[in-house]
Amino acid sequence: MRESSQYLAKKSKLAKVLTIYGRNAVYEALLDRGVVSLKLHLASSNKKAKIIDDMLLVCSQENIEVVYHDKLALSRISKNAKQDQGVALDIKMDNFFSQEEFISLNASYRLLAIDGVSNPQNLGMIIRSAAAGKISGIIISAKGTSSINPLVVKASAGTIFKIPIIQTANLVETLKYFQASKGVVYTLSLDAKKSYKQIAYSDKSIFVLGNETHGVSKEIQSICNKSIVIPMNRGVESLNVAMSASILAFCLD
Image (tube, rainbow, N blue to C red; front, side):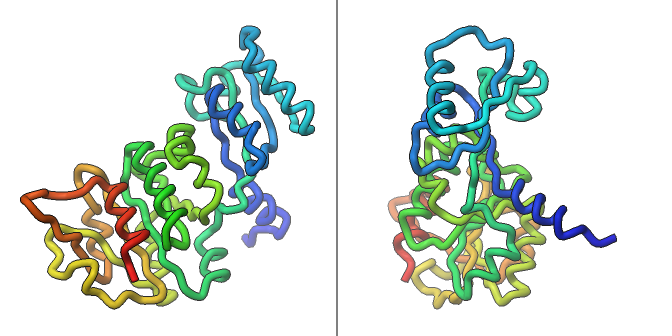
């Protein structure tokens, strides 16, 4: 059965909402004029605290909806009962795109695809480098990759709101979708024969960054079009994944 246009519109709207949690992260987001805050969620069991009073004051001034929940309900919203501190905030993310939306809007692109980067600080720094450099957007896999949480937002220094983000539940299928639209997938590999400087890149390029320990997964390697290597000197084995992202963001022609 076909999904109704009303349902699809609602689904698209929900896909552009990010929920962050934690008192400091939420308060900083409420104060940031570049962030569109939609709804503040508070646990009804929260004890009186100045930072919560300050949040409520901002919400009153900016006409942001405030909703109270029992602790269990709030944990379902934050998806992190251990660290939400009784606070969550829905943020409008106009820079979140589906793969279909992104391709329809971009005739050429240079993307980073995140395959299993588990450290939130690494993910945040990758986003920061991508936003500052020559990267058009970032594909983030929900499987095995850090979620976009307050640590990621903080490590990105707010740049997560400035670069297109494509979230996917299945990175393999998403990469295949881009390939079907003439996208070329490159993986970083120490076994690759050619340096990243020796390649004439497609105007539709996707660079896959793998897990901090295991690198790019075998499943992704099996569908990639080409592998490249960042040459190392003085016996250095490899670079941190965030450093590799910086090289791709700034050093490619």
